[in-house]
Image (cartoon, rainbow, N blue to C red; front, side, top):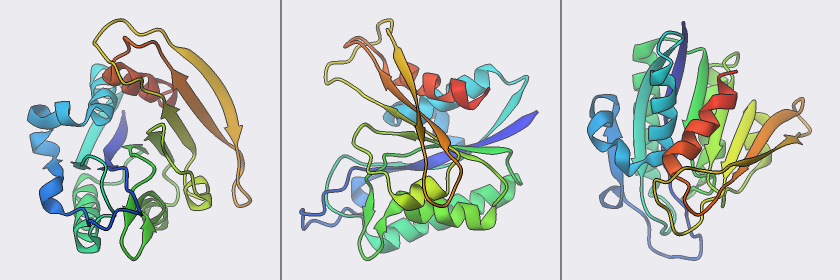
Length: 210
């Protein structure tokens, strides 16, 4: 049985906005609260649901989740506390076989820059042999550091009008590379206006499980 660590932070940061996004702007919850609050973080919900439905093969290690609507950069102390808790929960669950992280891709921290770059570099420093797969928003800003510290990325495009109807997916597999690593796989998912973001996240989890 493979252990899949799932957790992350989701925020689209506007560096031109002078307002600092703080703890009151976030919906933050941990593993034991996931069942009650997962509807507020649909990308994470879809990933967890997929692996739990295949519990004969995978054990989910849920960590900490934090999501906020778009605003200015994130308070640095808040981000550090979230990241510290991420690794604290991770240490309690042992070394996972893979990280599958629901991230935005354009989250910025005051005085640091890209939250995704910072988090992924820290994960790889501590768990260099464990692969990392990302689920990213359509507005993700892919940095060289993100490429250097992940084995795969999946981006998805959501239209503004969504229902829970049956999705119609068109998947195109691309190759991405950086100067520091061998090429990694990337998927870009497009769908009809009736697609569910939960089902999109399940689609993300599927190629990661192969």
